Image (cartoon, rainbow, N blue to C red; front, side):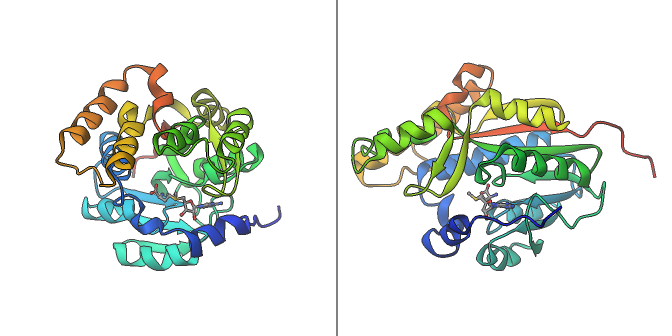
Amino acid sequence: MTAPQVADEVLTYYSTHFDEHARLGASGAGVLELVRTQELLRRHLPAAPASVLDVGGGPGVHARWLVEDGYRVHLVDPVERHVREAADAGCTVELGDARDLSAPDSSYDVVLLLGPLYHLTERADRERVLVEALRVVRPGGLVVAAGIQRYAALFDHAAHGRLHLDGREERSGRVLATGRNEGREFTFAYFHRAEDLAAEVRDAGVIGTRLYGVEGPGDALLKAAETATGRQVQRESDLFTSALAAARMAEEHPELLVASSHLLAFGRRPGQAARS
Ligand SMILES: C[S@@+](CC[C@H](N)C(=O)[O-])C[C@H]1O[C@@H](n2cnc3c(N)ncnc32)[C@H](O)[C@@H]1O
């Protein structure tokens, strides 16, 4: 099998155009994504010091708190800048691609895929990522896969009051119709319908899948408030506290998955871990 190549557009975007390291602290919606990702992961992860392979871990924002929680984390990412930044997070790091991992079979308790699936626009590539994750996680181990929700760009542009500007309506329409985002806003990406993400994960062989909306119905409201006021919504504010409560309440209502920008699928590799 030929070595996979990450699209130049994705590498350039993260290397020079966008500071991923700052993203989750730079807006109320970013902080909400961080807090909710933390609480969902903490709810499902095995007890520390389990081993976690953070594939597409970027600059290590999640790796840092996982290490602080006592996990042994190895981070893989194709962007040199991210790998350099993540080296400071207390994990081990490696330049690599989610479709072709160097890790041995059954070598991790948990594999996180919080990025790779939505940067691969071909289903065959996404399937390869999931098959690799199932190879390197131990039998019975946890696989967590993130998707960007199909309607996220529509809500995002509308909340920022710019959907009608500079051709965004047309580009967002293409994303709604095909799932594919091809630049200008963000970079090459695939936006999943919730049911399609669940099916891709299940078809690859992950069992017991459960899907969560990360940010919930307050996501676009936080963005609209920031656009209207020009100020970041603070974590201590009523608006943020209420958005967090709404995200938690929405978990029991799958029809509200469309309100979140990010989806997280949790599932397991079939089989039981061998007793040592
Ligand atoms: C939006 S960032 C997410 C970073 C972090 N995991 C998080 O959830 O905050 C997406 C990450 O996916 C990485 N990525 C893109 N294509 C990938 C691939 N083929 N294999 C592994 N990682 C990839 C990017 O380099 C980037 O670091």
